[in-house]
Image (cartoon, rainbow, N blue to C red; front, side, top):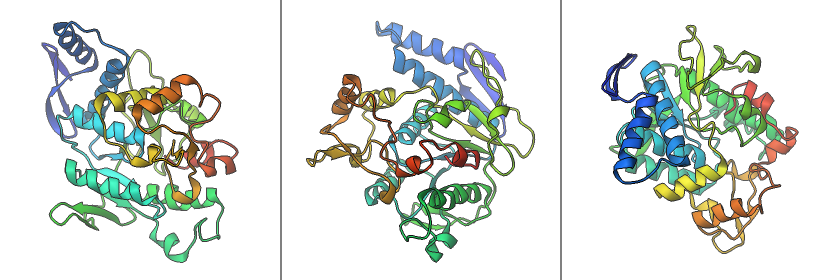
Length: 333
């Protein structure tokens, strides 16, 4: 990578990428713009700058890149940041693993935003397990076993291209079988280290083996904003631009940027809302009267949620003993 006058020209798997601003110059550029307006760079500005830098680094270093979109608040913030990083366009596919048990509002939101933002939207499924009724809602599996089949196995085989993918046709607005089955070797994910114990062990660029298995003790060090992006052939790399964000950061950023989010996060008058979203049968709402982003931030600042884990409504976490480390070793998001 060569740097001149504060702007980098990077040659990577996508060819020459002009105008990519490397991290220190991105910070300098934003500081200059803020200084012109008589402002200082705040905490959210710094988080945004680092995430944008990581997204651009990932795009410059990995040819077969995709982003996982769970439709939740974190991955939706990540989608927003990607659109900022690439000037309103997302230059890689968004992949959603559809268990067929997502709350209907989530799927409607996914497809509405995919059409509005003209996203290269793809979904994958474990059609065999669904066809045989091998699920928790059908009474044949535990929640963890269901997650392993409908999420972990579906994700592994969707990313590898071994199973059929479905891509949105923007002319019709419908999904069709995707002719491209090339494996994705770089996968951008919206996980945060404070959300759940095993996620605190991740790196910004976190390698998996050919089978997507995660060896926790074999993670590269990341010091002084230096990231390892050169891995052996066949290595599958997860990229985590939101790793240092907190739940409060996410909601404050959603409020500042006015990011559209699923209505399930807000109390509609019932006195309940969802704090974390997943499959309908395994996700429970919490007692809350927060009807907007400001109300959620107030709850987080007041401490009323201090002793309640963010994923406390996710029943599979309880079945797994309060953590998801074993599932994540096998490739779970």
